[in-house]
Image (cartoon, rainbow, N blue to C red):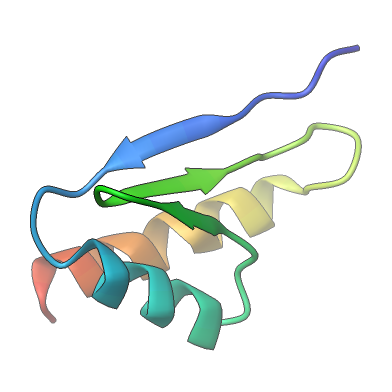
Length: 64
């Protein structure tokens, strides 16, 4: 089974989004210019963990 890597591009505030994800305990990687890489792996991540990532990302990106 192969893993997956998602590269999410944030044209604005990429570093801020990255820091907020780290502060929430989510392991991600940052690459210039504004790319956040995340690697959800079916063998290691539960549905709840992936959903939590989405919730945190949505909260940070919406500015809520």
